Image 1 (cartoon, helix red, strand yellow):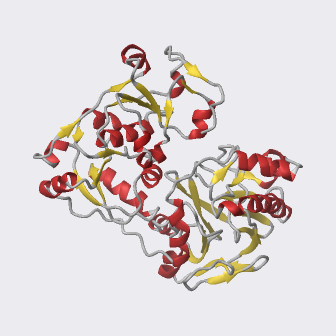
Image 2 (tube, rainbow, N blue to C red; image 1 turned 60 degrees about the vertical axis):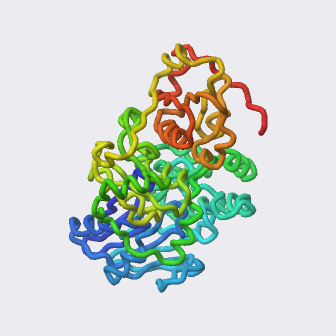
Image 3 (tube, rainbow, N blue to C red; image 1 turned 120 degrees about the vertical axis):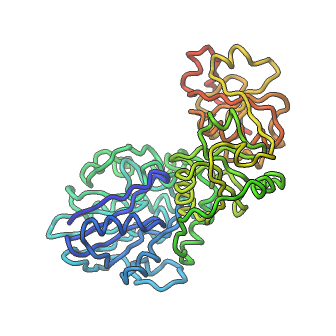
Length: 454
């Protein structure tokens, strides 16, 4: 048995190609299935089976289209309310994939119908746990419905114990989540690999002997998750179509100018430094990188038309990332010179500073705006800072204080997005492009007291 890991760091997930040298099983494929197919070609194997551990909350699956393309059996829990044809599979059922035996294990918790798969090759085992048992933690339990969270957390506690009881201690563990995905919860270890035996001694879901304590602690430590998750399960249950990854013909200057004039969402993919110094007035900054699709999908109004602006490479990568979360084929204006892209449109800029310049230049009436999550703000904050998390910003523009806004986050990435959104809304902004952890050393007064509720 060989397991090929297909990383999607942009979403913090992994997919897997598991094969015996001739035929292969794919587990939890992302929508851009060309990466899986390339791995199969390189390994010289035929994809005969595709399996889903659950109806995914954080991405659009490529499972259905991959199975169709290869005439493969599509293994989906018989209890999942899907509208497409699949090979239903239930707890305890086994499937042969060449020399491999694949056994489904019911592991509810992340979802009600979650399955894990134990793959056996002559006594050698690998456990594919999806959003159940992760490295050091478990998948979050609050994505189905608020009223189900407590029950699903109890289910999660029981499920991981049931799973490890059915696998050997030396079995390799291969979760889908836990590599930065907001689908993970608790103290994820950041490890790149692990075994069932290692998790028995290191995973709080297995070492905590008090189920009630585990449930309380896990729920208390759940943080905000991207709003686009609400759309993923629905799309996956209906059976998503193929990914469209091609970059369309670049918009001409007149059409780009019209979209800016009409207030459409024009997304600049350049680095936040370049954007701050010179950009098309009315555009917003979502610097392309591993966090791009998560924050764009979280912050931007769902379903509204987007136009991407940036280099051909960044646009190409951005389209691939966005199709994974169901944002289909956005238009683009390819180029990195704002004036050349739309010569008749106005340009804009705003200051970009470090903590030393905040200390020296901020007036007493100015506001420090902290756009980190509420849980980050609760632990520690700049004294007097106002907290409006980035993902709430467009919904809370009326809560933003008047006057000059000095905007920060943990690293500068979220603050760059926030500054562009607020400038577009007519605010006077300064981007603090600095690490939060360096603020105190720079002389910024900090506050670590517990903030008052509300």
